[in-house]
Amino acid sequence: MKWRCTWCGREYDTDVSSCGTCGRETFETVSEETSSPFEGSSIVWACTNCGREHVKHSPPCSRCGNHALEKRSIDDGEYADEISVPSYLAVGKPYLAGAVIVIVLVGLIITGVVPFPGINETPTPPNAPGDSDESAGLDLRSVEFELFERFEAERGTVDASERTLNGGENGVYIEYLTKHRVAQQYDEQYDGSMPGTSEFDLRCESQPTVGVVTPGVDISTFEDESAFADTVAEELFTDDSFRDAVLSGSSNEEAIRVHVGPDGTVFIGYLAC
Image (tube, rainbow, N blue to C red; front, top):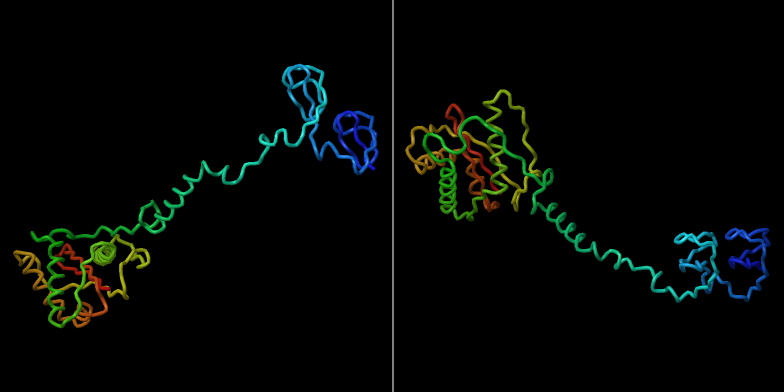
């Protein structure tokens, strides 16, 4: 047995003294078979003056202030289109394009294609005393290429595979290492440390061979880059470990950096992988 408020239609499982919705005290019994207005339809209270509908009988009208509200029964299907719940896709569609752009951008940042401050930044080589671009009138970048040509020629004499001179991340790494060594030797205030190889995007297919050597060559006695490179290469090849690194068949890329210290000492940074 259920009881229904005769005013607002609210149903109760037990007999109550007053309706919790409208406050009225008159009820009628409802059999289990009787369809409830809360199941098949909805009850609203419409203003007799402006038509504004209210979910409770709580005069006056919230729109016009009229105190006369009449009860109406609204079928479920009457406002089906108005109360239908939109799908997740419909709600999120306006933001879909933006979300795709964000996902793609994050992917490009993670892979290093797009630089982002603090993420995937390659360490910047330290300032080091001496010359890293030109010394004694010689272009040190040209000297690096001349040395590579000498190394390629030497590999040709023993049928070793050719290599590529890498000026990208491999070049940045060996430049950092070379300047780090120079700064350690000449700058008393330098307290930097050498970053690990994981902080550089090294393009290596094998374990890299890395080192910084100081051949006993006076750059001021040479008039051109080619003659200077000839003498430096000849001096370097007297070191068996350096010669093995140049001729090893397991490497296919090289990076070379030349730096001249304040006292004329020549530093050769070398990476092979």
